Amino acid sequence: MMMGWVRLLFWVALWATGFWAVRLWKGAAWPPWTAWLGGLAMIALAEGFVWAVRKTGEQKRVGMAFGFLSSLLVASLAAIPVGVLPMEPPVKTFIGATLFLLIAFVGLLLGYQYPTWFHPMRVLELLKSYHSGKNYKILDTSVIIDGRIADLVETGFIEGTLVVPRFVLRELQYIADSADPVRRNRGRRGLEMLQRMQKKGDIDIAIMEVDFPAVKEVDLKLIELAKQIAAKIITNDYNLNKVAQLHNVKVLNINELATALKPVVLPGETMNVYILKEGKEYNQGVAYLEDGTMVVVDNARKMIGRNIEITVTSVLQTSMGKMIFGKYEGSQAGSS
Image 1 (cartoon, rainbow, N blue to C red):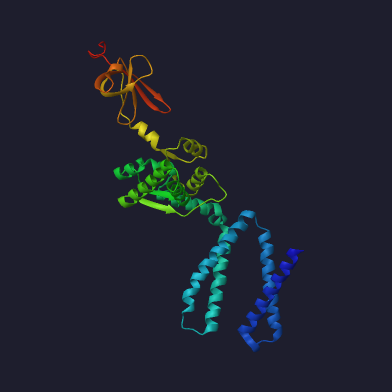
Image 2 (cartoon, rainbow, N blue to C red):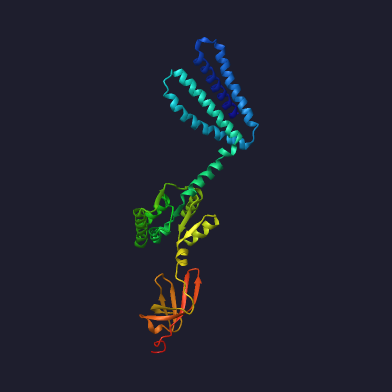
């Protein structure tokens, strides 16, 4: 019933358009019945068009709709130079209307003949390919607070545009305003890292005004954004890393990079370490390399607080990182 009333109102609007178009064009030169006929002709053309559209497939209808919308934009741009032509207003109106109808017809025709050109999915694919050319990399909160990303930027190993979504910036500000001094310091450190990268100037830092109100978790917001702009996520969050992989989103993990860059140590090699504390087992000492790798040394309990030369016996790779086991064979090993 509602559609019937809408259709009736549409007919009335079309009839009025045709009626007044004839009246304005010819005025009193033509008899009144020609204006009525003009209104009926508009209704007939519209109904014929609707009938023809119903005979086409769904894909062609979508193509025609988007082709027509595109033609409206082109027609609006084309009407600008027509408006400044040195002609009488009725002539300019006639030229503008003719141009509009011609461009609209071309848009409908192209949408019918080549519906895939105007399909929304094709537009999205073009936007994704455009964004992928930008080489976007999204920073999450953890990697900004960590700070090592700033060092990577300064070395030139990171290329493209680093994207900081507005919701990540809000989370950083929330942490920086926390009553907990530890969290507050972490948040302020993250903001300082962002300022440091912005001042560097060798890489673009883009604050993207985007949010996903229907998505509550920040990690899932990052994944949705990465999908939309064909970007990679830079993080050191293990859980985000795994969830992003399930969504087929590429992740650059700072921790994995740090592990890959640790120096390779082979059994039988010697190294100099500083014994920091006692180990769990009998007569063991524990040392740490500059990158944080733990070194467990046999026969080194009595060497706490001293630098000693050890021989590597084995290397253990765990999910938490690398552990090196060695043995102290110096003259002090058997003493005391």
